[in-house]
Length: 258
Length: 269
Image (tube, rainbow over all chains, first blue to last red; front, side, top):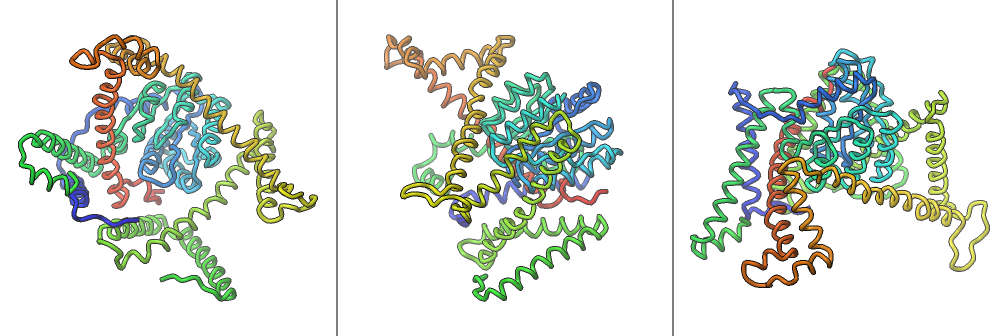
């Protein structure tokens, strides 16, 4: 692994962005009221859980293909919230995973979520299933699960690859209500085409803040938005200024990686 | 810093000691109250989360770099422990289907057949490829190596390729639903899709080949229109989403590092 190159702008930029997000968290901790816009896909989670309960069928939560990384951690956090809702109605969630580390994490998170939801006995450890670490073996396993268990709701949150459409189209054919969220840009169009609701890009990382409305989490989302405005401004300013800036300044900006 | 130990007896003693220590840590963690577990997880997450960026941002090979490989090994060892849990999970789920004779029994039998045969064949191929078999002729594979090849190249690869090939049909059905003209967005989507699809087949480029290659009208040629759509519309939109997600990922990483995202700092119950 290489080390940071301090002759470019990138390491400084990462620290500035981190500081801005930290500032957002600090402001929220100090009591600043922050607002987060509506995310219809996340509002639909309760509807999906309710529908599965009415139909007396289980739900399926797929936390993506990746092993231990930030999108998968986020997916597990979302699964915890879905499980808390499911516990209220004593509904079942089946969670197939591709990684054994995620298996242990998911089991613990869901066990605690069911306990917090007031139905610890409604949690079945065998519903958290390790299927395979191979992409298409996993996909065929999930498709089989969907068909055999006749799932009423599908949640696809996490990093996905080519199997995304195989999973989402099978769920669509089964008539399940489907909510997806992924930071994998290449898979977003597939989920939009096949799912009822899709969370895209940065919305994916705002889901837990939206669901819990915890001020500290909202603060981090506020900080991220400020970072995006800053980045967009840098892109806009450097693009426009190319016409006016002297050659030497442009060369300097190119050298530092702008 | 951590040079391999050559003395086999000392090696075994260290392995046994590490195992005993791991078991002791597990026992202590399990018997400790939830809030202690929570603080252990919070503390470890913070320390490791601090180490990685510090090691990266201090220029060149620094005093922290020597711990990088041992930490990577530690992660692999921890992941190795959980593989056993994965196998236990599979055996429990499918074992229950067989014991209770549920309608899923055939699938569970298939699992046990596949699991046991692949394990046995894989181990024999690795360690005793001629076990209970004739010696292979010149240029021939040993019996268990040939069996391993049949299992992997003759069974597993075609099966995974079959699942992958299903994607072609799913793309058609998803595209059909997405392109049904119901809204302005769907109409725009379909128009863009038609232009890009036609531009990628010979008949598409032939359709507008009579248009000039220079001047304003060149943009009406399908290949140019498709290029404009993909590079000027699609790429910026994708990059915009990627920028947003990257900053979101940074925020989420910060939340996990500081244990603000409470779902991972177990011990609530």
